[in-house]
Image (cartoon, rainbow over all chains, first blue to last red; front, top):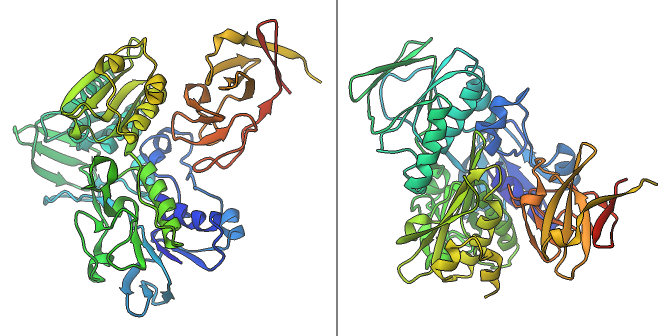
Length: 405
Length: 104
């Protein structure tokens, strides 16, 4: 069993193969120098904690004990499907019976001239270290892109005392997948913390002088920063699959078993697109930590012949200041919204399809105020339930009671 | 052997639910099972120190509100990624409508 990509997904797949009792060789190939580690903290605690600590998903000892061979700092450069081998960038090659491609995604590059050493992206632990070095008090940070990575970094930078400007081309932050009502709360939280947010602002020019960056907005204003962090989305890493003749459709195209058209090659996590059963097989690609975990584990099962279909509901969270947002399901499937207030500041929006089916739930509140009800909503979505809107909107009705119905 | 500490009234916790209890600078989670039995564990998830009492109880499982790590709250056993370290459990008894836990 060979796994290309040693992130959350690849790491979980390797561990799952052993959990499932597979005793043959397991090789995990990754282009970073580290063991598989958790990426969510990179835009949060890794920035603001005492010292940046890498949070490995399992220890060196555990990988050794489980006889998982980890080849680090090496990429796979080609797959010979007929010979069942993968060629690596160090010149060596690996034979496989089953191959899992878990190459993840990389930050979308800003297609503009003028970028330089003070214009950076965040994906890896080493990227996080480089950014952290510039977030001290008094420094000026420009965040290009009002998505999750950018906003979490903005919150971290403020906590460390930097001056922060967020630039977003869309009319509001978090346009993709987050309802306007919730985005507005996050927008206000940032403004209350002193972040300047410039929405509806395209970029006219960027000039990186090596020590600072001048960013000229579409309206002619210029923002000068010590560091510009670009967070404008991610693109799946598919080159290896493309060159191997595998189909690409917004990511490596796999079926509900995470299998490509080649029965011996699977793909999972950020790099793949797959049919989502709960929405009638709509093809999606998810960039989320839990999805990477679940698909890694499922791919491992199916590599061992289980033939189990992916059935999970998408779920993700974001932490900014004291606020946590959680979203289960895909809110763009909804036609109407029912609001349920949990306390003075926490609420959940239930997204209902035209036929009344619950298709998503978006919640925000301080700490983990929305977690339990979002989890219950996720189970209702998975059951394809159509709860009465009055029940969803009423604090007096427990969501758990709707699940039993 | 340490003393029994009163955590809450038995009726404070719904069936198949959990409640946070802080005592002596430590935090615990007290559970009432669907079979109306009471249990207690350390209050913080072993993954990232999140309060489990904000999580969801389903049967004999408590699920962490942050990253969905799962534990059997009766035994403390970790039940899958991302948690790998078991949760410490404490003896519990109900006496005259009060839930008491024995803090070791």
